[in-house]
Image (cartoon, rainbow, N blue to C red; front, side, top):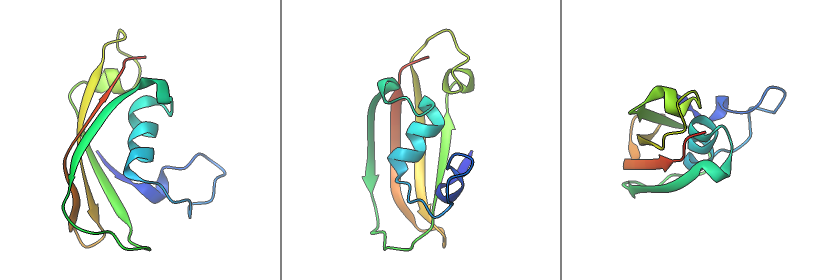
Length: 100
């Protein structure tokens, strides 16, 4: 699943809102509930400049858990963040989250 940070906002929010990788992952995997966030790790591989558009690719081991439809199990997702030209800026990302 690729996630363009500029398209993650709630309906009615301006698309210019700046999202970090953490914001996008929390919104997507935890339903914007910070209590579900457990931990995150990753490797910064390249600088990001103001104005860079970022795409976050997320791979979830159990999609039902991520959607909150699972039986309350904890989940883990891997992610990678890249700029518009494909340069990877965060690699080997792992986010752990609590089930709903």
